[in-house]
Image (cartoon, rainbow, N blue to C red; front, side, top):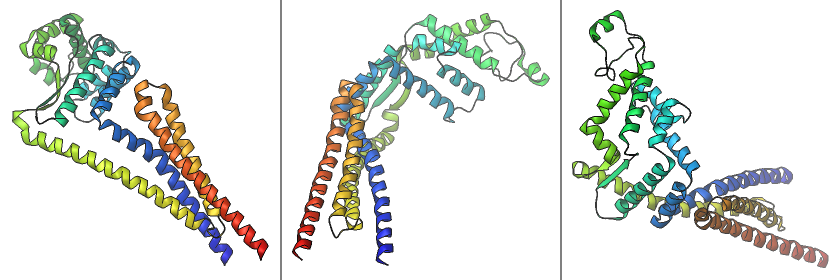
Length: 336
């Protein structure tokens, strides 16, 4: 009966060891990231580091466009397809868009909008205006719009006879609004339509000021206050969650001490080995990040290494105490 009980104790101990490893290796890095990003100076330094890396900026911009296309916010299938093409840098539409949205321009947007966010979060004002501002080049804008119009048109289904009869003459003035395809259209038609669209005052305002992504002003004060309060509550909750996570990890260590043969010090040795292995894994994650960027090294990788070493130190102390208990038990056995 004792043997069976010990087997079950070890099995449960191994389960808790697995949970300890998983929670520590995922929870500690994630909690550290959330903790750091709530700090204004760290968040701004990360934004600048991202903006300085063209490859990272390109990936983020592509993901942003893909997210819009797949979000379900766009009901028009043709427009969804247009965004999918825009997300790819190899399509004609994607190439035209990236003449206006170079990594340098998108990087500048990241820095400016991140700064606006922290000023809004930390200040008394409820006004916030997050925008995506591309290059102010009317010719490039006209080229982009022409490609978008043609891409949208080519994805439309053919008109039924009734639809075609109701449309009447299709030219540069109507090509942007038609719901179906009337057949082959000259590229000049799309270019003419694009020039007319870009010349409109409302389009010129977008070109000069950018696309509004998130705006809080006098029209939605209550919504802005709720958003700010929610963010602050979330940040306080993350701080509490981080504390709870460490308490949970310590409880798992204590459970392992209780379950792994607690009579002769083996439990301390086994628990110590698990803590050391977990700490080395966390420190390893931190060391992997050392080569990414100086900002990441200072704000994320080094703290991860340090927290991993805390677990290693706990493991060493536990093993040392376990060895001492084993030695003490051996001496007592000899005396007897």
